[in-house]
Image (cartoon, rainbow, N blue to C red; front, side, top):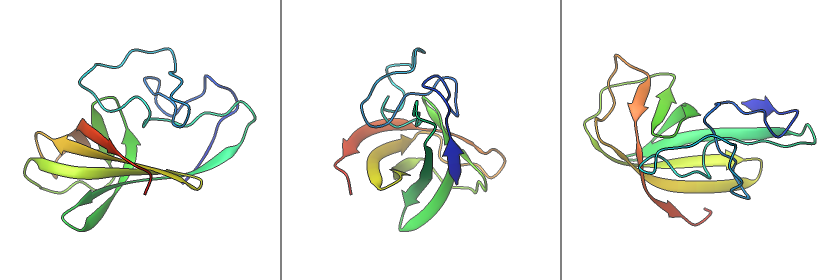
Length: 124
């Protein structure tokens, strides 16, 4: 997936935050939501970043289409009970990982998955 941004205010999600320097896009996120540093990538120079997001569950890698403040969007949802998973976000050559809780699990009938950040792991 390739995402291009023309200015600092451009994001994939209007409630998004930047990766890297942790500089917030002016929108509030709920305290219990996902980490502010994991949502979107912006760049004022018009750079196109290579972005890959995946959820690791029981040795399985599930592509993530979008990350929101307290949810994930999956292209191909399936049934999975509540539990923990690891969210991996790769932007160009940088990678961040977060342990997340899926309080409602995943339902094959909805691509929106509730997700709460438990903690951040060092770059992997």
